[in-house]
Length: 388
Image 1: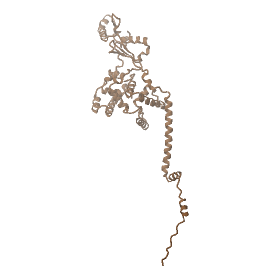
Image 2 (image 1 turned 135 degrees about the horizontal axis):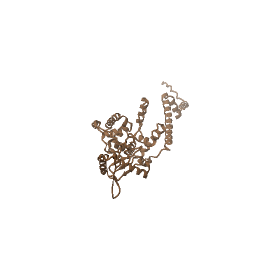
Image 3 (image 1 turned 30 degrees about the vertical axis):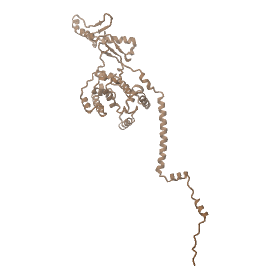
Image 4 (image 1 turned 90 degrees about the vertical axis):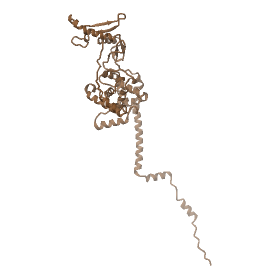
């Protein structure tokens, strides 16, 4: 007789339903809180620091904008640079307009010169020595500034980190006062200048503003003063020497040995930057250089003094810094003959008891002065040779 096998009891449906309702899904906020609870402490602090840093950066940026706006409101516009009045020395020439008789300049000797009339060597030497990243930055060089600041703090030495643009702004606009406000203004104007002008224009500004010893402002005055030539004719060695002057202009008169050492260093920098080869640098170091210092040159001096007196009557005493180009009636060939006549005739003059002599040559048709010698020696002190 078959035995009935007992069947397993089915679980009540109600109990199954009840257990499924106990597994409630977590809300998003609960999941987020749970993750945060189990997050490493360093991550939590890292996020807080990032938040604080972001807020601090935002505040710093706002403060920077405010400072920029505060200092920028009273600054001159870069547009004014092209129209600004530049003190230039007045030049007096003979009748051909070619022979320079005299260049005035009581406080300043300068001739504004276009960039195309300056030797490429002079431009390259200046960039290599003063601002090797000139063609890459936009007014200031943050790396150079940080490097110079580090050296200044570490060694207590004053090392410059200014770009050529900043140096021009300092020389021509904001002055050289050592204050933070002046430095901020310099920085703002440098950025504005780079937006307004090309690199060649900024170089032209700087090379006409930099000091090259004494009253020589600008490369043209320096080139004429030390080498008796225009800046477009400078040799490599001469350009390297002139480029070394603006950092310490007193070297010209007080420490020429240091100046020539700096000239050789400039040549090395030019080679490192790829402007010249090492062989060119080595050859230029051996190139003999003589500083002529032709500043006081005055040909036909009595005539020049006569012209200066007329210019003062016509334009006032400040004419010497107005950059005038004055072409006179003097014939320099006849002037040389007149000076020779006086020099050779003095023996006869003294034989008859005379002590001095003078000569004036006039064009009988126009009355123009062609030659003038006011005394036998303009520079004599025992009888006041400058009296005409």
